[in-house]
Image (cartoon, rainbow, N blue to C red; front, side):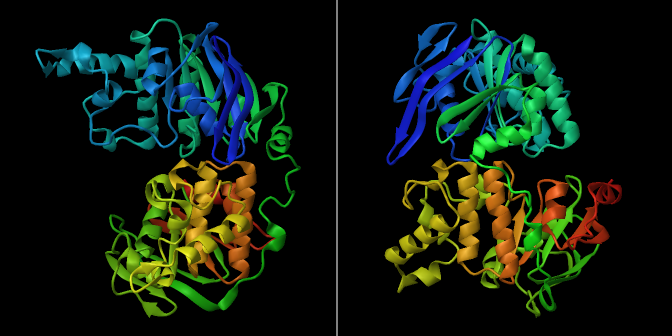
Length: 501
């Protein structure tokens, strides 16, 4: 029902897509995998009309079409559920579902809210989401917002002829296992209404949900595999062009940290909105992982350390000095860096280029009398582009246009190049492919070897166990259990889970 033929796309200095052929049948779920920078995002944008190809064609039911805008694609029955979500938080659910398509509910210049609510409820029923259509979107959980995104796309059914094609861009990246299973059940049931293109770095999910999988590498389709016959290890090798290192988490490089050098100490700290006291010490070279279920309070700990919120009680000491002022600038001045979960919102400054993002936290070192040293900024950026293998045409590229993995590397480079001695990583590998994850793991080991203290909120329990020296299990805002994670004596995921729930 949908097909791409010989699609090409180039940007200055980069051949992004190279003769891509792709098709999807009626009611089919097709997976799309590839490394960060392989061209997945550009391919999705072409399908959705946000980017126009330089060559090739898009066909629906054999008929060639040209999409100048996403609105053209929506008129043809193509919708997209974004990884970073496109809902406007201060609007109601029903306003978001029909944003830009309010005309059926308008009479004499006034919106019939009751009619809109009824129509929105019909769309929410399709995804089995039992919420009030009039609720403000910001009050929903991430999983609920994801289903509202899906309901918004399904609203196209009543506006277009024929079947829908729905693009799912990393829809599970911050969902719990239970929420993922619910989403997958909804998608499978919706096959009667639509076909799906599913993009994810989690190959087990791709194989569980998809019928076929396209493997994209360096802008070209290198293989198409049947999910029932495919193996994750084989697909990984095709994605990165090599075997995956057996020492995936680089446990062979885990060195003992300096227990005589305390970089950070929390003494009976009570985070805002939490009743329990938190106390721990972070040593030079130590990787401390905070594990717990979503909402356990781990992020509040990081944000208190970084000065984004003021603790209600207790003290935080950096290199033995008690923090008196709680602000981001003060924490940065004390050598604390923070890689947030939402890199596009809090990690990078979209619209600014790569070298500007890298030096944003250290401009005093790159200016004289208020005048920036542009040459030094460019030199620093080129150095870190080489060190981290960032796929970018040059340091002048807009950071907002990079793939998720390359954006994450820019954020990592910002704090490493500034000389931060304490770095907090909140889901640093979220949405990254296996090759980019290995690059992050290498950097974690390098930071540890150089005496940097790392606090980690990992994407999986296996990642936390593999990377850390010490694990603190957080439940309901309280540290419930400590684990020593020296090589050869690491706990199992089950050991952690029984203290998490």
